[in-house]
Structures are given as C-alpha cells and as structure tokens.
Length: 306
Image (cartoon, rainbow, N blue to C red; front, top):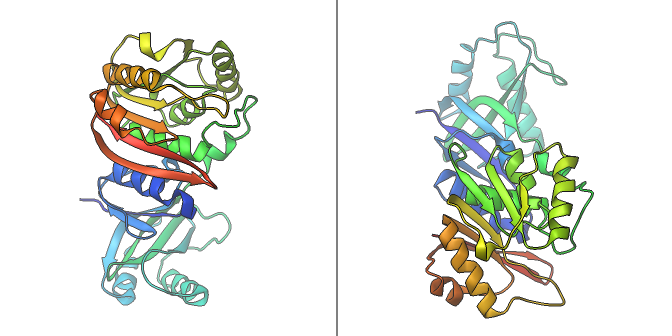
C-alpha cells in the first residue's frame, strides 16, 4: 500500500482544531508536526498541512536511501530535493548537507529555483523516507478579501477546517449550511469541491453571501430560509449557531434549531460560543468528537455530532 507523510503547523490556539481536522480526514491521531497515512489528499485541502511526501524509498539509514536513489528515473526533468521536517533534530546546516548528499546521487540536473520535479527526504519513527514532495498552497488566504464581512464571522482557516470535519470525503456527499451568514463556510467548501447549499433567515446576510460568492466566481447556492422549517435530506450539516454581542439565542430557539439540524442530516458539526451539551442530547444528537478554538478571550466550541 502507498504511504504518504504529511507535515502540519498551526498556532497554539488552533492546535485542538488542527488535530480534530486531521484525525477526521485521516482516521489517525497526528503526531507532533506530522502524520503517516495510506490516504492521499491534496495538502492544500487543509489550512494546517504544509507538505505531502509520497513515499517511494524507505530505509534505516541515509546510505540505504542513496543506494535506492540511484535508480530514480527523471525522464530528462530537472529536480530539487528538500528536507521535510518530521522527527529528528537536524539543524539548518545538517538539513542542507543531507539535501546535497542525496542530490549528488541523482542522475539528472538540479534546479534550485524552478525544478520540474520536487522530492523530499524526511526522518520519521526511526526510518528515512524519500519521495515526491508537494507543497500546500494557502488557497483560503485569498478568501480573506471578501466584499462583505461580519466582525463575528469565522476566520477562513476555521471555516475551512470545519468544512473538512463535516465532509472528510467529498464524492457523492451533499452538505448544507442552514445558518450560512455571509457565506464564509460555503466559500471554503465550494473551493474544495464539496456539494453544498446555504440558507439564512436574514435577507441581508443572504445578499452579502451572494456578493461574496460572485466575487470568487462561485455559484449562487444561497436562499432565504429558517433552519427550523427547511426540508430535504443531506449527508452533513454545518450549524454555526447565531451569535452577536447584543443578543443571544434563547434555550428554546437553540433546541429547535438543533432538532431541525438532526432532521436535515445524519452528521452535524455544531459551532457554539457556550457549552450546550444538554441541548444537544435533548435534540437527539450524540457528540462523537469536539474541540475548543480560542482567539484571545473569545472561544468557540466545535462539536461533531450524529
């Protein structure tokens, strides 16, 4: 079976969300800074992943890798080798020395600026791993430049991670964001090929979401609607419970929304600014995983329910 090594990084405040997203995508608990998996994903899918190494050669020592690397066929392409940090404590100079040592055994022309093939070398769990390397592109950063914004809206990084937690496998999955606001989650989901629609009870929010979607050349998948009266059947729902500084949902309203989410989808990811475990259970949902995302003194709970 093909093995992939993924590296990741995040701010300390987002580490719980990062780990929740990665274990949802890959089904394993990530190690510090990296994980290994047989699942192939574009590293740009996650806002936290940095590199993906498609393992071609594996060895107990660097010399074992150099013996295998002589067999590498480049087909006339130029190449570059980069050190991918996983385990180990090699410093900057040691990393560059390893890159040069391996590069000297490749039959081909190195190009440090615009190589046609990028390879990586990593040390993980007592083994050296070598293979093609793909670097993540920070797609979500482009989505910060939205014409319409809410001060309390999710950041694009959190929105992208939440979309991945709700829909870790995209083919054949239908999702809904029934409290979509200005469309932050919709934009991230659509950019990853997730089949999703959005609703909001506030016509101004729906108008703003349409402006934002159009700004990025995305389809209009938004309609005015109250989550409590929506119909249809979806595989996943992302429910960012309404919140602002002037007013909050009553427990009765929140319970009605949670019950509606349970009716709409078998998998529900809930975003809340307070502990609502009792309401979730009362609505007939079961919490299977969770985390807290903090930004200064403000905290959001992300709850995965079914």
